[in-house]
Length: 271
Image (tube, one colour):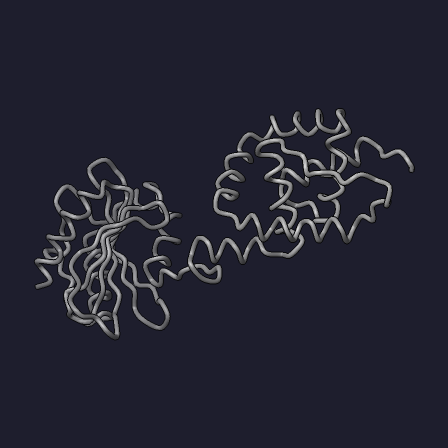
């Protein structure tokens, strides 16, 4: 048998720790490790450089269907290696977390089950990304906003015209008194379009100069919904509907309790 170059083993060991080694190669490594002290030492050295990998695999393996995946690994080994009739049967090495990683991970890779299994185990169904609708769209673009974005104060005339345009597009009245918030400086209205519906953003700076927004969108179906607090995209959010054909949201990195207080005030004004 030809000698393997150390760099070939290094590439395969890194791929193994990254979960990217194909099943046949993973099975061959599993067979070599018990008798190859140098290979074990290099694997241990590489593993010490990736301590973040171990906890992630530990969590994955805690809930993995081990029996089924082990059976698949046995099939992968049988398909890639034909042992000599005289060769004694070799049991799989028991090296704590590493042996657990080799068996289920290699089998899952061989069958292409990792993505599907994660979807079933974590979400209770096929893997998917739940859509957040217009709330997620706002969170996505609001992530680009900094205090500098709102640093230049608009003129009173500009503020008035912005509110007039926003009111016209939404079909509701957004007067300066209706949208004024304590300890916050109103920095103007912007009209966007989301899925063919007008989406209005009213931007503010709080007393510390942190930007936040009050967003209003025309909704086809909009029954009354009490203010609901949460987080989205790293921001605190409060969203609600007054049952007047629009939905509302406050978003920003200001404290959640402050946004809830503002939401209660705005909800009361909207009737």
